[in-house]
Amino acid sequence: MDIARLVPWFDPTVGQWSAEARWLRWLTFVWLGGGLLVLFSASYAVAVAEHGYGLHYVIVQLLWVAVGLVVFNRIVHTSLDRLLQGSGIVLLVLVGLVALTLIPALGVTVNGATRWLPLGPFMIQPSELIKPCLVLQGARLFGCWNQLTWPIRLIWLVIFGAILGLILMQPNLSTAAICGLTLWLIALAAGIPYVYLLLTAGGGLLAAGVSVSLKTYQRQRIISFLNPWADPGDQGYQLVQSLLAIGSGRVWGQGFGMSQQKLYSLPIQYTDFIFAVYAEEFGFVGCLVLLTFLGIYASVALLVALRLKQPLYRLVAVGAMVVLVGQSLLNMGVATGVLPTTGLPFPLLSYGGSSMVASLATAALLVRAAREINLDVPLPLRRRGTRAGYAEPVPLRVLNGGSINGGNIVS
Image (cartoon, rainbow, N blue to C red; front, side, top):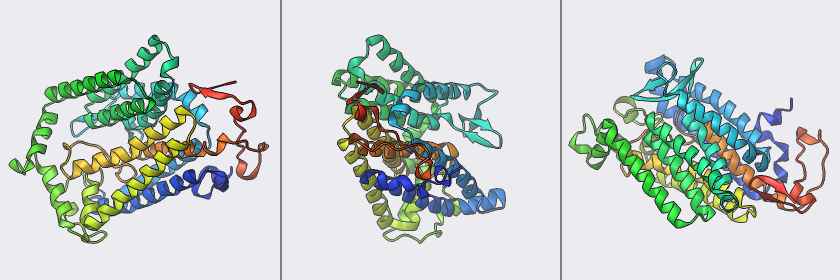
């Protein structure tokens, strides 16, 4: 087996990619490497206390990174046509796994939420793994909206609604919100009529309101978010400790590994509140660097969307950018008190195997979309077994002047 299939940074085919694809590839690796360093700092002390070994969480995360990189490389070397065609089946399988979490004998409950399924010594979170599939299927549905009949539209809208409903039942309001927001923004980018978008937004807000009214802890979180100092020892504890950590960073930060809040008071410091640890250690300047990095990543992703000629590919790029950058900003908003406290991981930073695999898969979709820019011009035929074992076929739309319609190639 060629090692390039497993280790994407040794991929010799990169020279044939578009400049945007190469940029996104290396920006993703920089994001991943920086995230592992931040996780090392955030998790070392708690790993010693809980497991007697400071590198426990980092080593487990590296195992999931290895799995995610294999998935990353596979997606990058698979055409978006094939990915779009297979997204529906994979999505339905993952919907089934989300439903299994609601069965008491199968679902694993942590901190009052049943979001995980056991996988040997590990746990997987299907609601995280479903995100890249939602991007693909959302692009496929809304990109071909005008060519589809109303029965087909309604079937997939009901499926999307069922997915969000199942995630809300876990309960997992934050993941349901990011999934719903991603689908809504894909529909907006596809040019769906505003009346449909407004009705959908209203329905989403209504569903969120019902969930908050039925779930006492969600309601308490929103109340405490409005004034966390009113109950700093209970309902406002997480946000207060996060704000203290961020404020302790001042301008230049306490230095890498020197966070004090992670040692004593800050809860879940290596998952949902990992940004607070980062802010304390790198300060205001470090936060500006992180925001600048996210801005560059989003700008390159939007440039890819603008350069792509196929509408479905553009929507994939937009959806992948929303999942990665949008979720990062939401996580930062929670840590800084701009948004209600919810359990939303920071992509490629927070500890968690499902989040890591899903984030790398989503980044791979964005890189693959960028690669399609170079496929808009004729490419020379290459036989299978060429350098690195990759044989990228000439797209049928190049050979016969065809085009893509709903993920299918037609002449």
